[in-house]
Length: 354
View 1 (cartoon, rainbow, N blue to C red):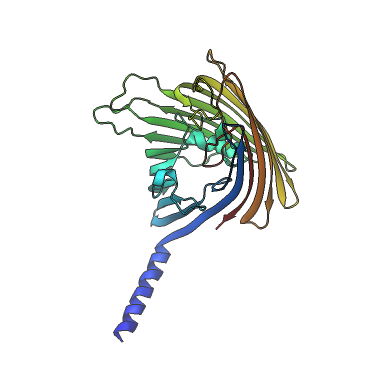
View 2: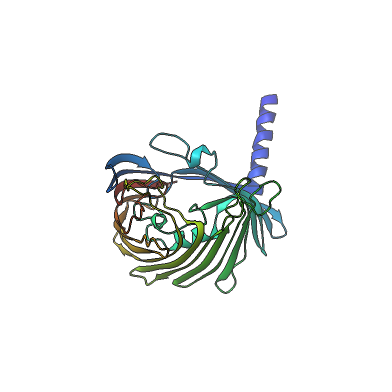
């Protein structure tokens, strides 16, 4: 009898919890055969997170009444080729936040994507992954990363197709509130076939020991137009200041006598297209990096590929990308989570979403 009562109590408790909140477990398993060439050595490998970083996530929402809800998200990145954790071994290195959602907007606190990164990822024909990744030449934020720690983010409701996104990241340097601080925001428009985003990001490069450095500032305007038979993608960004446009591989991968110097004044342009055909879609993009410093270390990226959907949750992909570096520039062809080792890359992979 006691066991029966305990089972009934546990069942009732679980039913109550389910009625009050909604928790979803989700993830991606992504694996590909990758060949990188054009650097000091040619590399062929089986790697994880090429089209999209492999992940395991938990997200939930609880109705608090009065039009208010509590929300949370915990997202772990991992390497499905080895089982190791990604993002430097962080348990929830992809995202980790909690917040409140109201009729006046949503406020979340924790490790989160920057508006600058989201603006670019939204219009990347390759979805911010594979060898055609925009991150190869386009800065994601002031330090070429896509996420902010210690971040407070506000996302407004959508009115007439418009909404805004604002974020503040504390540097947490004792005695200096500006050191390491990050600020960002975007104005977004999405109505009918047109999506536009104007985003900016500011990062203070000072640390507890390094003082009086210039800040990194990035601004980008992105556009996506769905014409039905194809989608047109475009972006134009301006990057200024120290660490505003760091290369993804800073280890002099081409063996130059003098290592490439990261640009502190540049602009970058993207044009691309995605064309559906049957159960798949053709992908293409061109990116031009214009280094406006005296070194004039320009670069151009050409990328093409095809994604074939076996189902709504599983796809196969093949992508090739080539970067033409000028005047000792050192940009490399990477993927969703890797920086790459040469200026040419081929990916053949599979992604499953659950």
